[in-house]
Image (cartoon, rainbow, N blue to C red; front, top):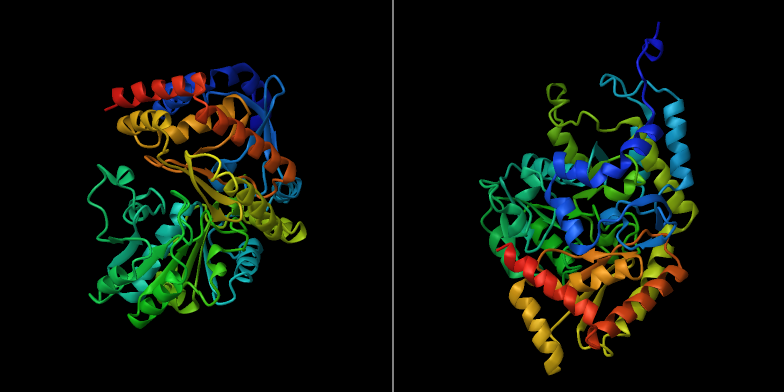
Length: 467
């Protein structure tokens, strides 16, 4: 008798979801992060989505929602791309002898070969399970390869939340209460003098940087990264490019660092979109000499590893993602669609005094709001700022979802910035839909729309109550 016929009830996913799916928020509040459902209820984001495809999802009533968040960048190809789905069905049906730990399966080598073809100056890949693992790998490899203890990072950087990557996180709110962390040092983004000052101490292993920061969608000044690379090489330190969010076409190049010809990071971290939205995966690409120094002998063959790293499902998803990107011209599409969206939004800056700047590259766009000039709007803006910076951006995000069924989110805590990182497959119709909706929300904000500013007062009360 097999386990499936031994008298048990068996597992029926559809039946389980039909029976218990309505309890989703209650279950989360009871067993997981209890603040998440509380926050979602407060801002009216406590929706129930039934299905998803591409850049859209639908609720139980059949209403369609436009996704301009892409799961914080994970859904680069949108949800449930048929090629990625087929690849996962195929790899499961193949019943491979996966994760024996003592053989070399073909899929990891094939995915590494494919990834490295986009960075011809790099030679080897380590596969983990997430973006923060990719950064942890880069930090460890840089320290070991250089024999130095310290890594430099930038204000407002976000490189992950595990202990090592948290040590190079430039946002205090994430770090508070988790000390002691690693002895790493923060510098202002774009400050070459600060970088050189730290390098002269002779103990710096590497400088880790996002080519465009996810928090606030901030890019370093033109030429900074190339100049930083030159300084690092002169001081025998490494350049780590965190492309976890910016990589795989997001900014209109395969990697964001490729916007600066001549920039050749020593280590590159990728994750998110490589998963196809299905299987967690992270990858750290690096130079041959770095890997050979870390894995310097057979005794050190497992000195850095991951239990689920290089699993067949993740490797198949990654290979399928890269194939789709080539076959469907995803990078060029992201560049063209991003230019269209950013251009149409930037044209509104002179129309709306609350709209301060539109910036970014490709389909990574930041919309920043700022202090208005007219007295009536300025008093309302001041009220929000006194309670908590970032509330106006949240006031924009909520009607975009509630009234226009468009999912966005603020770009970081205490920031008056909305970040748009939609699936790279969004089209001109999606751009039109967002621009029309955003214009309507801006009109309401500038016209003193009662519902919008009443919600602002609710947010103020919530912010003050949380102090």
